[in-house]
Picture 1 (cartoon, one colour):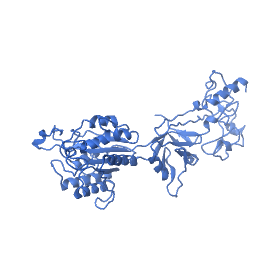
Picture 2 (spheres, one colour; picture 1 turned 135 degrees about the horizontal axis):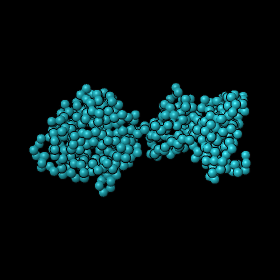
Picture 3 (cartoon, one colour; picture 1 turned 30 degrees about the vertical axis):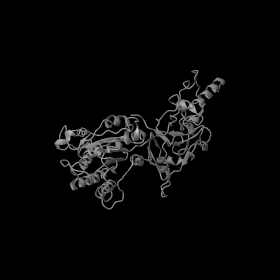
Picture 4 (tube, one colour; picture 1 turned 45 degrees about the vertical axis):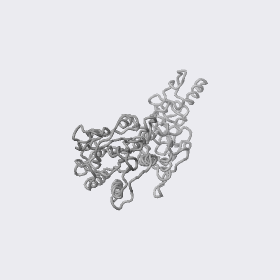
Length: 470
């Protein structure tokens, strides 16, 4: 190799990361990329099997797990056998350079050199194929907040007592302040949760026929005969956003309250339940295609009625339990946060709904409703539900070759996570399918408790094939 070519090859080696044949995107919790060489057949002239049949005769085919276990000029293939695509002095079919480990390396002669020089087919440094950093995409849960917008949310303080014409402690004000922050200091929980879940918010109510409603300026007032109503309108589908604060604040900030609490019908509507409990509305939560967990969070201050009734009733209570049970059959868990009436009867009802929402017997289950008594407890309860719904599952922008997961190295916050051993208690990480990994045991618990967790996955070069854009 001439002196000028040596010089150019050294410069090429320093920038070998730029010759990657495939690059995967980044992610909020980590920022890594996939780099791999592009294999290509050699133009090796003889018909005895390329370089393995002549210059490297007898050296190819041996078992390996890394390039270093193969003879000079050979690389360890994804079948764990030593191989070579090319050799010094013999170019690849595409004209790509041949690496020191016999790979057709993905850079045309001359194109890798800053001065535009040429190459005579000699080998180049193979460091770029030392290993593969895989980009991961966190699977975010879909969480729907269903907020009671009935008049009692204005007429009573949080958690108990008359509101005195909606003083700062009224339930509606407290709930809005927790979710989006007070007007003087906007933000609140929804801003804190951005990036942690896909969130949707719906406010439900119904307008009764009380002629005195016109005297209560805080009520939305009737505009139609729709029941249930969502922010004063008929249901028109759901919207989930990873950054939901701005759009929710624009709707929730000016929102007032309406009359009644048709909780059962409201749940059926947003979930999209048919009369038989199946999917009845393609715009509902149940019909939404998703591989992520789905969660319904019901925030209410009192017992429910049904459409056409102004006050709580046994049919209203039964309707909520049934709706939540049917919701659960569609893979959607329901959590109940009661922020008002805590009479024995009300608490019994809320607990029944919470049990049904987790697939338990409504009367004998032990899930229980959440009963916060301070704004901070309300914020903590809502936040915990969302954070607990997060998964420990990540999608790879590529596919791990069969059997190669054992060669992977996964780290969480700088600490190596072991591969989950089959038959042992779940612990470490595992390959769910060729394009998805999952943390289990204490690793999952650490991930969920770390707000800025850093997760990386690395495999030997050739162990991961990149996704091909469609």
